[in-house]
Length: 129
Picture 1: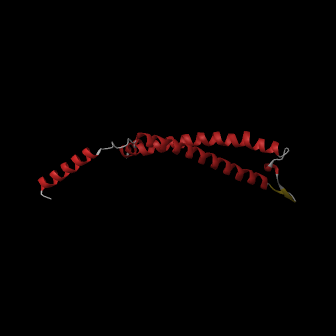
Picture 2: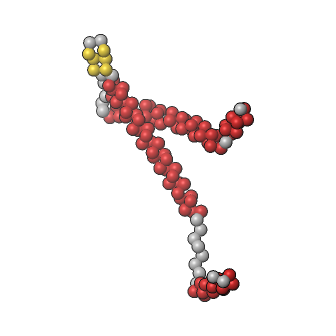
Picture 3: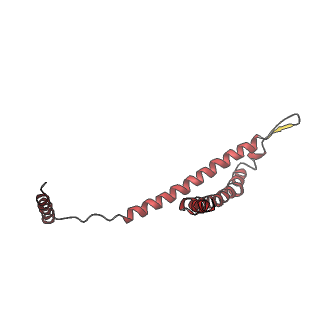
């Protein structure tokens, strides 16, 4: 059983997944800090000190803090958009790298094309096709 677990844990996919989770968690903390510490206070300043998170409705002793929910929804959209931009930027760099690696085929002049066709015809005759 221990050997099976070692084989499973050391596989490349499991290690890649673990690294992705750690990096994703760290990136999530960075974006959450960006939203909570920079973006939302800036929005509050622009709106004259208004904070969405403080919105609530009282009914007797119960207090519905719908502002906290709205704040979480806004945070979600900002974080999702930030992750979208990061992935889009990453894929754009990846595509440029792939395009640069492709080498164009050499352009053959008419003599070279004719020689290539003759070679192919001779090869077909030899094999009897």
